[in-house]
Length: 220
Image 1 (cartoon, rainbow, N blue to C red):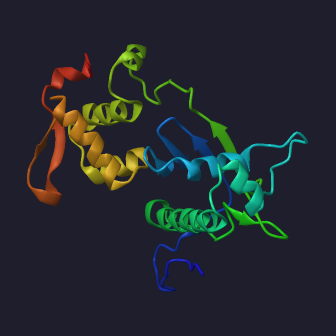
Image 2: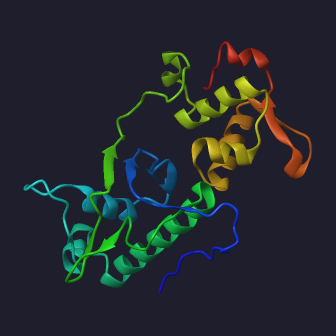
Image 3: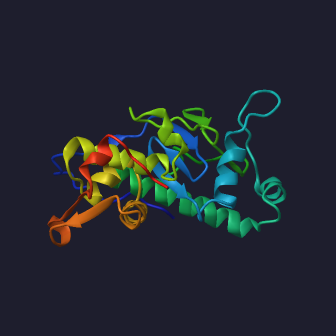
């Protein structure tokens, strides 16, 4: 059985309780309140499961789906595989929210177990489809949409333009992504000749190779 991360009663900054959230489906990731739950390569059945549980029925209600219906909807995945998938998603949500947002999420807060078996997503979770959303969440010029860098990478460049430099941990907080994703974005920008690492180890940071890029950014 799953358990919440240990929280010391003497903690000066106890976590807040999770009350509601927005589940956002993008082309390359799935987020809950800005925290990345699934990325490209991790999608597939897990994303389809979340979409199924948040898609209203003809009566306008959220479905409560048992193992057999989910098996059929997910292309024959075994019930053991579905149970394992739900277990991993619940555990990931609990851990990442505690780590990234200092919010305590209960086992059934996001993916609940329905009466009589099966699963459902509570109505406290709002679902939104952003797979066709191409508007960058920054103030950069609209022509950036046509470049090769993704929206998250533009956001990183904007942050460097404002601050002069940025660390990987700051990127994780800014974009709500894992260390792996932040590193992948930085390597992409470095390989494009846009950024460079200065300093050493954990105390180092990333800056623009050419400061004029803040006026004309060209990700090809």
